View 1 (cartoon, helix red, strand yellow):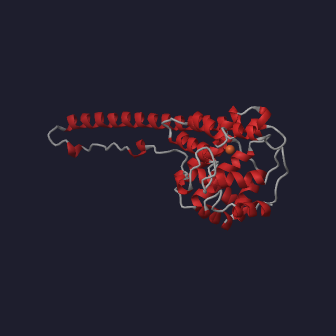
View 2: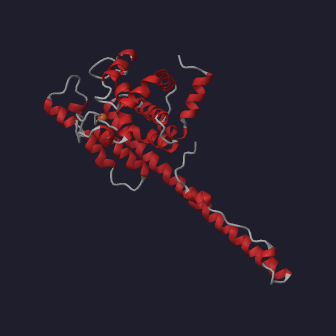
View 3: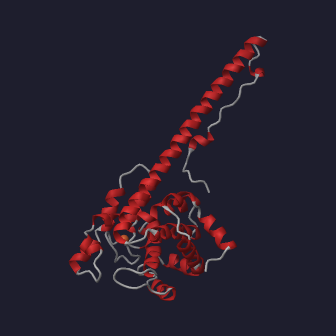
Length: 281
Ligand SMILES: [Fe+2]
């Protein structure tokens, strides 16, 4: 799929004028007029091309800023940035399985890695504590969703808007017991409901500073146990029905971790094609 978003100028057309369109001019005059029109046409094409390239560069800059924000948060929390790469692709895959558009899938691939960007504002003594947080520490830790929202919100860029939504809503729970707003059910943005499940599953199956990883089977049981509680039941069903594909995708990313620039251009379809021709171990 294309990596650009809504480049309306792609549809701009400039029609060539034909000599027949100039019946009242003599041959040399019409030739001159035609040449002038062709030159104007060429100039316009040049301007459109420059604008298109400028928009592409702007989009690329937006993506890069988001990725670097994600890196800043991730490097404070974990030793590796692969977790947020996995979150991006698995959120995209789940979105497509749920019937979301390819454009939404692409956007959430880039926005989902931002979900914990607010951890930039959490003290190391809490963020890296090798044990359970006490109630006061938990209150501070839970502010990371609102901090992330404040970092990303009020942008005119759709990608930032989606990233802000994900940051704010990824700890809401379907039954209304989440935070920060105790939103309920479908009132929680679908992007938040998707990232909540993907983040939960991926975090369970990786080592953390305070515990070892859970097996996939145990993690799946924990997801199922939270159906209609923490997670949207429809999303749980679709995720678990396709769990083998998610695990294969995760293993593929782990075997060949891509960098942040590649996250923009390395499509989910590319991973899927690799999985078809060279199944992950
Ligand atoms: Fe979080």
